[in-house]
Image 1 (tube, rainbow, N blue to C red):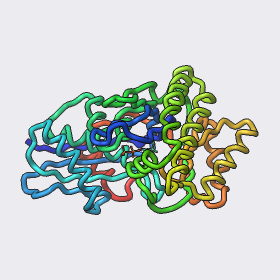
Image 2: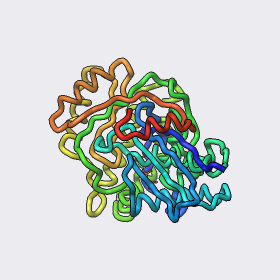
Image 3: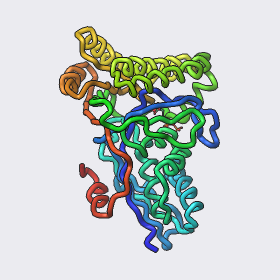
Image 4: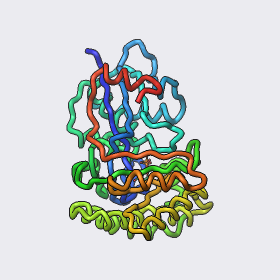
Length: 334
Ligand code: DP6
């Protein structure tokens, strides 16, 4: 038995945000979320079970990892081993095609690719929804990266579901990078801190489902304006809740507000551009595909913006063959 498989999964950006957990042990979110999977930002992961290993090995872009990153990968591998009756340790080689310095979350695409490659390498052929449930236990946003297009993780659900295919709306996500370097507080820790200390957490939990519903209804009705307005409110309501924590959790940098101001000005000129921010300072802007270049050019002019990129709606996660993985696993390869 070879015990080896490779997978590729795309990153996703939530439009109706997940922030807070009902069940920390099972990693079940306290609110429903809905995201867009992005074609141009993805992770490729190869898992090789190997009888000569005395522990799991995790390499990101060729660099061996230790500590929490490695432990989280091992926990997922344990679940795949248990399901597939695999006893060997594994070597995990992973590479993101987007620069880590862009500050974009790699845990969603990373755990989605790892769950797909690990279950296949353990001899299992599972429906994507089962792989999604496995990825969710590592990182709830990863559950959504198994599916392409527009994807929901309902409140209480074990796995994500596709709401609409990638082409449901002809849009792009423009990313304005506002600060180099890694984020200060990770999402898992940040949401626990918010839940325990922010008096606005209860309000967030009460209102998030309604914003999720508005995003989903707008999406199925093809209404980008209604979707974008609900999405922008979801992001700002989530951040307001973090700001009210003690001590406050503030991911924004001056350039974050600069980009929000530039988008507000574009909106006054009639451009349909809708911002969203995650557990970091960068701004992602949902725009009609035809306006993406103009919006990207505008946000690049904002003081403090250090980079930008555009991404189109992307496909399902999929298994890939070794040759394709070899190319993508080469550090620096596209
Ligand atoms: C702000 O999925 O990273 O990006 O389940 O603890 O791993 P864990 O959290 P994670 O949180 C993502 C938070 C977010 C919003 C979102 O993606 O919905």
